[in-house]
Length: 415
Image 1 (tube, rainbow, N blue to C red):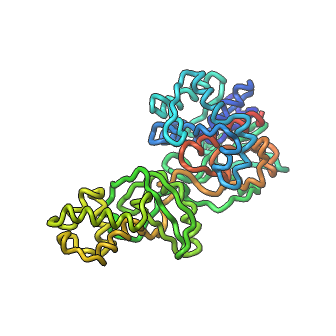
Image 2 (image 1 turned 30 degrees about the vertical axis):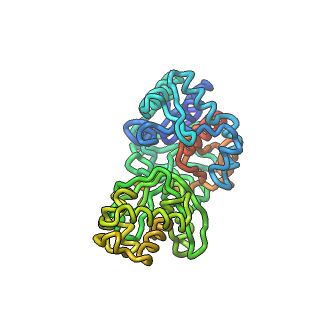
Image 3 (image 1 turned 45 degrees about the horizontal axis):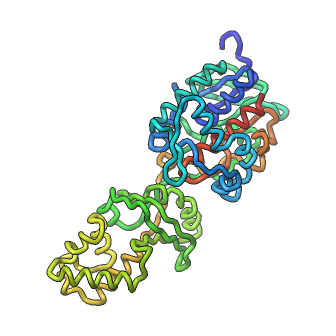
């Protein structure tokens, strides 16, 4: 660096998108620098998929894959056509990392170690002569006449390049280095930043009884979400009760929609504990069960019918005395129980912070990025990749695939 601070491409941000962009540009035999503010690369990558790294999702059809990112997902079609899930899996397999497909098309390294993915990337960075500069905190980006002219680091070092790739991620998991720096730089250069919010984030609920059932998980819970009395949508998936409310893949995936409803007014989450049965069928089952356990107290009787941790909340919501014997339960009380077993209502109040969110919603406006190249439409020698742009998918490897695809495309075109 002391001798030559000039490069063909400078990539700012050593997360998944930045690493992929630097590798691609390096493979094309250009002088590439990868700047990372932390002491090591890929800190957030090591946390993905519960530290197992949910690499991608096996949705090989490009349009089907793009639709997972919402109405704006078509922006990614070209990036996916160049380097999609199939290409990512082939890249890993070719280079010694075997993969396996799990439920809902989620793809993981067979070793279940995110570090194996990072090690391979570091090998490719070295093998393609990418200059990795750790502890490189970008202080300022200078620009003139719609061109970036130089980067100034916090130690006053100045770096220049023909082209620059901004891949600094979002604001989620800020302890990994994602502190929103890229948004500030982009906005300074004239880019519009769509409002930033925590995404794929646990939901807090009003009811206090949730503390009594924290730790309970349901693998195939059916949830109906209401605004007032009108059902908005339904989802089935894994949920976890926590001391503050709800988490788990199904909850993370609906957090944005629930947030939209809360901005307009009150929302309700209704858990259907018996999705394959109607109220009458549940009532018949409960009656028969009561007949077989006439001398037991209600709380002991239900222990054989429901997850034990869930019983206190069921009884609180139905307002039936848990110590009452089953043969003393009135029809009215039984029907209250039946209703709760079909409609277990919870009131969302908000969300946890960016530090508990998997991704950041919002980011660089797609209108200001060329989808064919990832080049800025405002700054001629600037490209974007990864979470910094305003595109987000559900859990299951989709957000990492966006990083691989946009990083590859930016790296290819920035040379």
